[in-house]
Image (cartoon, rainbow, N blue to C red; front, side, top):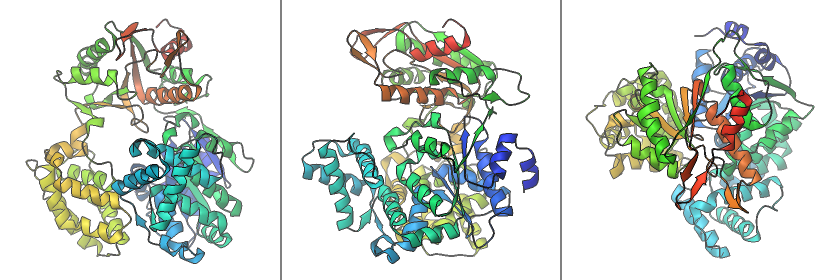
Length: 593
């Protein structure tokens, strides 16, 4: 177990200031700044010295992966989830700490144990609302717009960006949820916001229980949570908000850096910037700041001598030439120089010609690649946990311990109202995990694993995780799950393979070397041909600048910027010129691209 006092002593001055400050705080945490350590030690320090039982701390974050990471770090300090610590996602906080305890007493008993729409049901409900209003649009494409409209309505924000039909669809969809006494994941936060805003008693109870609320990745969590946090702060809770406006790349989900910036300008908050970047050297830090337009004053970690390398790779042959150069030139040279394959990441912007070209070259390569967007498995919390269990079973490096895996299983049991002795849980989980055989298919192993642990029964009893239930059925029965278990196991799968993924999916990760291809006019940033020149919409340009920043800052040691003097787009038009981002980085570093 780690020593809390010793870890606190190793913090840099800004981190220590953030951890020890006794009032609401905004921490602006750039890439590689030790954000996770700062949040974990803040929570641990509060529970150790300031927040005494039965009161507690709520720690809210964006993803289940982050919840797992925080949980592991806190357990190493002897701190476990329980009455004095809530640790979970926004949806979990809203469901389990607001809707379930308080919906009944504010006259909304149907929200105490709501029926949560499965994804197919949600898609059908969107289609029904589109049809009712007379909008001819794919429900899957409309989903993000629907989310933004519903959030704006719930938060009292301007609806000017949306037309009358879009507003009407949102109103019809909300009415469907009320009529069927159902919620989707968005409604969990919107209904929780409504309760917090309208009930003084609920606010008082929440403040009494959670005098401190810590929020990670604040820039990504959207208007509803921001308003919940604001309501609870005004009612007496202290807030510890951590994030980076420059890494807000999920605008299509409703993420908006303005919420974090609003807190940072609030006099009730102490603003602290973590200035040290423990990941990258000075040259990489300077290069990353170039597309942002101004310096952020980040510094490399004290004692770091190497500045990192930026390689400008101008390649003939357009996008196809870039793919050949990367797959048959850059990657083999890096591996020959001693870089581990899994420490190399090729980060592309999105689907299109660049990805197609990379696919074509990878199919002919000797080196194995992990093409993450080709992963065939549902993106569900239960699938990620089962994947971790498979990694443990096959002896993958960095596998979770049975204790860590058992924590999730006990939480699943508790949500379904099932409680077993800890030793019995460990024995059952051990038997299920160790029943694995590398020769089994994923479907065969998942079926036995589910039968031994009763996952489907627990999820059916819980009723709030319909997508997890669908995912377990998919693992058992889908033809696509007839793949070797070896390929499913997370730890086994990743090591020894070069990673090919999107800049979006790279957020929160780090690699020794990052390769950024397709840095062309009209592609990255996206631009349209207008009046004889390629122009980007202002909002699109801002979002692409942040996306480029996120991609470049994943690197510890080296970045390759890959581009061509010209390329042919999908319409066979010749497009000339590299991305302005390449030019900006070169100018900042004082070199010719």
